[in-house]
Image (cartoon, rainbow, N blue to C red; front, side):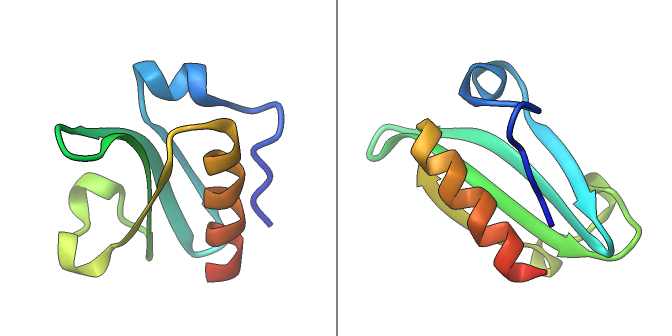
Length: 83
């Protein structure tokens, strides 16, 4: 189970991305910005042993959430459902 409590939060994601894993599931949390939607929290996951940069984009699944603490909790719950 992925538990990000006390590990990281929105202030960290404003400056850098966060990577992690749980069993075969690998994931990245990062800020994405666009003119249309503003700041969003992207949660990306894939399975296997390769890092994000070595994994083809078509093998990854991405979901966008509000760039807030609540959005971070939603992203954590979404990632846990993927396990």
